[in-house]
Image 1: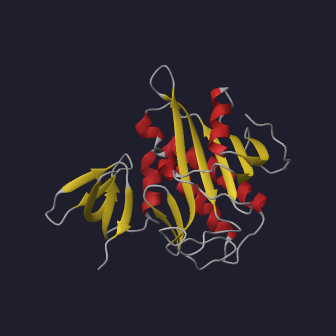
Image 2: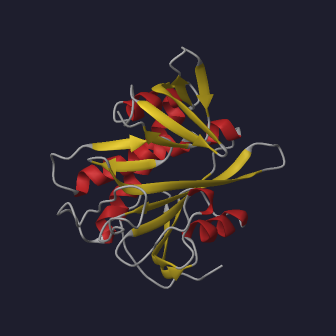
Length: 259
């Protein structure tokens, strides 16, 4: 576990604490170690650079200086199914943050299960990692986000289009973006706890990409094809095949089907 070396004074939500670093292996790893040592909910680990950044399924997340890499500790004391809803909570907070720091006129959307896009290009990714307590309930969730502020992968480096605040002529400083994000996260977490997932689901669907479209869903070895009709009450993707068969998908990657 590293010791914070960078100082940054931000207006954080009440009770939140920022731990700022120049470089870490992974902000999620750093935050999980601190959560294991009883760090409080609202602890934020921020690093200017990661040397072992990762995305879903262990993929490498390129982490040069210029983008925002952070992880937040949340203690839901809930089932794993409920804790997983924090991915949608986070997408809404990231979307609100992006909207506040890029010029107006762009479409901010969500790609199930954990990407935030601007005009169809990825601008942020989300990675949730959790630990279960003796009761079987999730005692801690570390919510990692990478937001492209000053840098984005070049065309061809990723299988998807990517963009950044800089490419959109938006905010270039990381501190204001981090402050907005923390405030937005506190607000959406509070709404989730007070109103339940239904309010989060409706807000997410209002900005969802691929709704009503034919898509492919890659779930490990299987590839499912159908129309993305909705999310169910838990956040699972509901896929309707040409034969009318309904499939509930809880994990996977989605791709549009060429017309």
